[in-house]
Image (cartoon, rainbow, N blue to C red; front, top):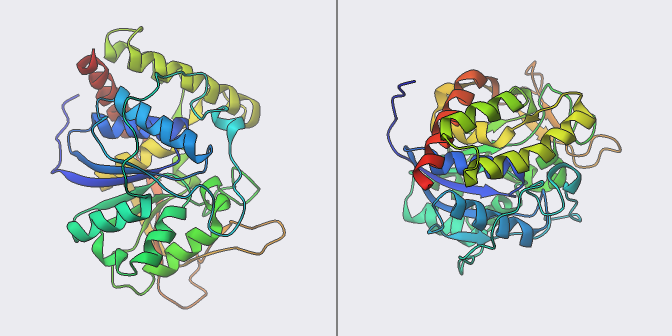
Length: 330
């Protein structure tokens, strides 16, 4: 497949590195148009020390150990942390084991990094969030002009028409720190900046990875014993087993790589501009992203919500790019 590569896209990536975050980082490392400026870490899938270690180790696996990695919030801004070790394994990478990273986190915390990089390159950077919005909420508190300093905010968060994956109406990232998500939406509202793009379960669950995709990736890499191929196989086997127990199929929804791919190429998704509020006090619905689909609130939109995504094109790119990265890293 011959793919036309778009212009360079400068990215800040904020993640809570579990299995699909790791795939997203590798996809970014493998994408020629991705200028990864830095990576920040937030507690979510696992506790912050595990997130930082996983992030450093995966970036080294992808050949980008040179990137600054910043540790951020170790808990949500207003409630205790809960983690998803049942989904991602006790350390966040399933059955995979990577060497201890050679690099260490940088001196700046996540919010400091986000604000400083946005100020240094106003209007240029796309901030992609793959975990709870805790770091973004802190960054907004420190710099209320952040929405105008960034080119765009692209988030993996919410369930807008789809059922939740953590509670009946709640998506994980929204539910871990709903106050941070609410603060983020409020911070962008009326700021005169481009609306955040939100990828919820409505579209990310269309990125359903199966053993067949892994087989194709191994063929693209040209070596089943390649370190990247082995890592993906061990990490995804845990993820596949989890989805087999809870979702009835042996495979996995790989939410985060799809979001990174669409941040690099917006043509992969179609969005609809809608008003959204985050439920903070519901007995059964805390963390729900309440969406005004019929425009009954009589106000302007808050988010550009992804309603369609080309998962077929995404998987073709993922297999091709990560396969090539594996070849280049040998």
